[in-house]
Length: 322
Image 1 (spheres, rainbow, N blue to C red):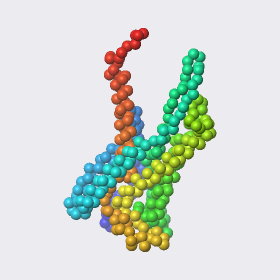
Image 2: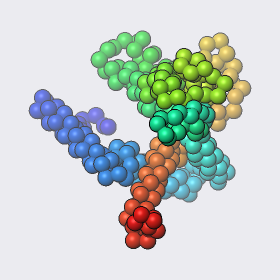
Image 3: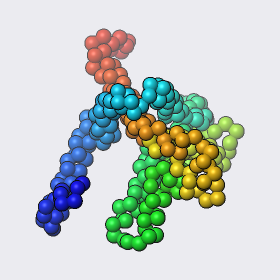
Image 4: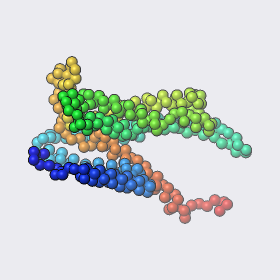
């Protein structure tokens, strides 16, 4: 913005209050709209709204890539590599999001009156990525705080901290990956409690073959969940850092002791990036693929329910008593 031009000519308290009121009203309306979508059984309303906002930007990204190719900013080889990586990222996301560990549960037979209950075998599905995209959102939001508060403080140390916490810097990448791993475990511990699962299994006569019911079962499930969460956290960290690598590369010069040597010997595309806006990777594609898979499952369940309850009523085979 050139000096002398102002976005708001009278940024007084009236403008601030009106801005807060407008943003709050818009947020409440979007939340209400998302709840209406959820109540209709189509899927998670807020996720679908975010999904639509991301999909709208895809055509613009494709057009920008074509324009960069025409002007010579991007080569054909770079675009082909990006498309190949895009396909690999989508395949990896679908594979991991559908991945789960099935813990076999056996229910003992019980005789109640003249009837026998139980004796069946089922499983507990433990997803590899239990937290979804929530850990990435939490980690990125916390790392955005210093840049938000930089205007409130002045000093050389503030500028140094802001620079080190910029995208692509070693400290930023380290804290980002650490935050994703931490919030993966934190969020998984909130939404899944192995002790409650083991207690419910014990009440209904269920047990894991070879594991004693109760505390041993909870420890067994917790061990499996801890290993799965680690794999899911590493997967989320790679997905989150990939777009930044394509855009700006990894700034290795600020690393103590070996930073200058790495910056001299590593390829330029690694340290400077490929100047490619990776619209089809990272958190965006994770949200798109995850929401699309959940929505397809919701639609399929609705179709199956309507098919058997509605369309097939007239053609049902009646029993002997009917």
